[in-house]
Amino acid sequence: MQTRAGDPGAFAQFDLERVDSPAFVVDAARLRANLQVLAEIRDAADIKVLAALKAFSMWSVAPIIGEYLDGVCTSGLWEARLASEFYDGEIATYSAAYKPEELDEVCRLSDHVIFNSPGQMERAALILESARAAGQDFDVGLRINPMHPTGEVPRYDPSSPGSRLGFPVDQLTPEIMAGVDGIHFHNLCEQDFEPLHATWDKVFDAIEPWFGQLKWINMGGGHHITRADYQRDELIEFLRDTKEDTGAEIYLEPGEAVALDAGILVGTILDTGFNEVPVAVADISATCHMPDVIEAPYRPAMLGESGDPETPAVRIGGPSCLAGDVIGDYRIPGGAEIGKRFAFLDQAHYSMVKTNTFNGVPLPSIWLWDSETDQLDLVKEFDYTAFRDRLS
Ligand SMILES: Cc1ncc(COP(=O)(O)O)c(C=O)c1O
Image 1 (cartoon, rainbow, N blue to C red):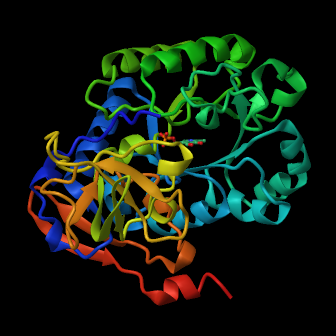
Image 2: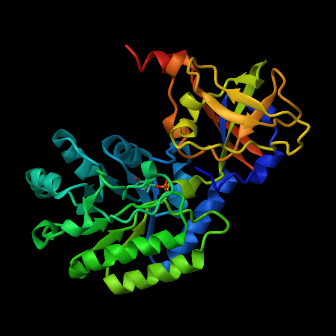
Image 3: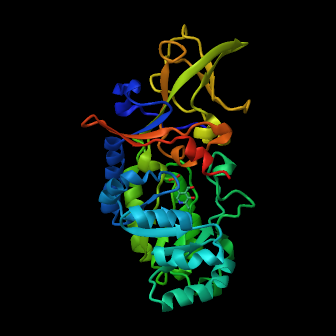
């Protein structure tokens, strides 16, 4: 998978020695710039925009997100709890499956409770009824599967054949739609406007009979809106038209676009060697700190990577036992020396939320930098207890 982010922005001027290693450093100014773009689109199109916590849930910056967006979307009870504890605005919760014992609290915390199937909705009917009788105020949504694959990688395409995500759009019936306040679909991953448009064409015909009943339509995430070359004008026009055609409130819930290019992961070279190619072991691990490198897979961009063919590319891997814990081959500026600091770009989203302590590898600390004021604060550091306390 080819990543389309990797703009160093202000990090080009950041001295990597100012933080410990490994460390995530998030630039508050870039975060605000992304949020400003999203808020401008929200205002121009007269829609609502929620930040997807699954992508970026550094809750110390929740107040910044709350200044710009309408709320957050969450993936289940624990994210909904995090949202209600720290974030402002609306909470829309969607989970592929809820446990019955979680639902009452999900209903209490969420403005939108979105189900993955009519069967789950039906089984939850009594819980929803008693939650409402107890005064809880929430809408019920159904996630549909547009059955319109648009993605480069099937693993990231909810419309892939056989997908469990969302109810197949061609199976909707009036009985199923009877208690549904809103429709949700999420069909994109790091994509431009056109795949959204094509998805909507497919969805439109199937849900048209319920325009008038639907209070809202949530178009999920995967919109790469804050990338400089995204087609923002087309998106605004489309959203305005859609709102008018459907009479529904329109929601977008981007995750990656909120934190795009807003953070780096700083590491240090611990050892070097040669095995057919130059190799290096770092204190950053693909498997522990950037699992999407292996899962997607993709090659993260390195801050200031040398373009000089004279600088040999070094195969950088993590300190874990996994042979495949390899980040990639890089020309480290100035060469790969022991003790050398380096950083990977665009690591604020989907890396910080996915870290783990396999092999007892330490978790990166989390720093907040403001490139406009140069203020740098250590938000959180993790010690041995973070590893110990999630085991027993
Ligand atoms: C239901 C849902 N909403 C929103 C998002 C956020 O997507 P992205 O971070 O690609 O914008 C995802 C990502 O998987 C998702 O599954």
